[in-house]
Amino acid sequence: MLTPSKKALVPFVSVENMMKLVHANGLDNMLIRIADAIEQDFLRWDAFDKTPRVASHSDVGVIELMPTSDGELYGFKYVNGHPKNTAEGLQTVTAFGLLADVNSGYPVLLSEMTLLTALRTAAMSALAAKHLAPKGATTMAMIGNGAQSEFQCRAFAAICGITHVRLFDTDPAATTKCAANLAGTNLHVTTCTTAEDAVTGAQIITTCTADKQNATVLTDNLVGAGVHINAIGGDCPGKTELHADILHRASIFVEYPPQTRVEGEIQALADDHPVIELHNVFAGKTTGRASDKQITLFDSVGFAIEDFSALRTILTAIKGTDFFINLDMLADPDDPRDLYGMLNRAK
Image 1 (spheres, one colour):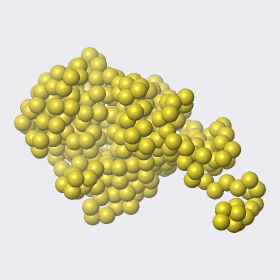
Image 2 (cartoon, one colour):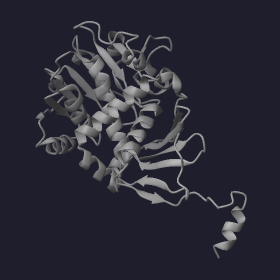
Image 3 (tube, helix red, strand yellow):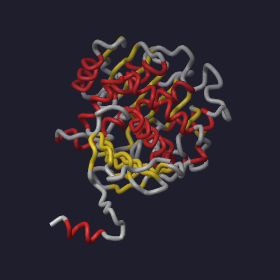
Image 4 (tube, one colour):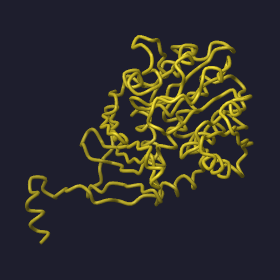
């Protein structure tokens, strides 16, 4: 149990301090720490409140709240998804999150989560692949080279040992950007002009596009036996990336079926199409990859427990540092019955 400070000041991690924290710890280390925290929390799956995210959809995007609690801490994330923002010079995804002490209800951390969501999403992708991808995989195709792509590549290198990435985007400028950002890392980067070229020789295929539509980013003929697909772009109703024939050939792994069936690639399938919950794979209750020829598919939509894990990683990481500021955001009078008197004395 956490005890709020006497003055009820709430630690706040800004974008600037999040960047300082990542650099101080090292990007690879932060990705590994978040992945470890997610795995730990998935191993205590039954301890958490679980609900699909609360979404408010519009013609141009979606705004969502993602809440959960393990009985000691409560957490939520506010996040939007607006693909049209890129053309306006804005981020497609922005987010912030909060952790609170269940015993008192007082917040104990407020944090930016635009950067942290990119870290969390990448860590979750690589964690799933650690359990599902072919053993000894060295090459990943990264289809969609937007804001998430470099984080995905770095996480797969740090957690899964990927050494080669093959990049493709329908916008060549995005591929150029991604390749430039990955220069100087230990990754061998190849830029490609088609999706077919990108998947050549890849044991892992990651799709991460932003357009809010039922697209066919990956066609059935591009998926050979034995590959692992990390599908992270289809994350809301009416937004998918994979041809349905791929789904029928693959063993499909998900975070939380009631959410994934509405938002993920499997929204294109019957409601009773079998899927495997990842927490059971992590716990050894269910087999992940069973053969060299099996196609495994992580139908990733992002789930609240992953954000909870990322936030508690940050709460631990800022201890003993100055990578946060204390916010006076809670009215907390000396006499809890005299809120009016506190206001009156402030004249």
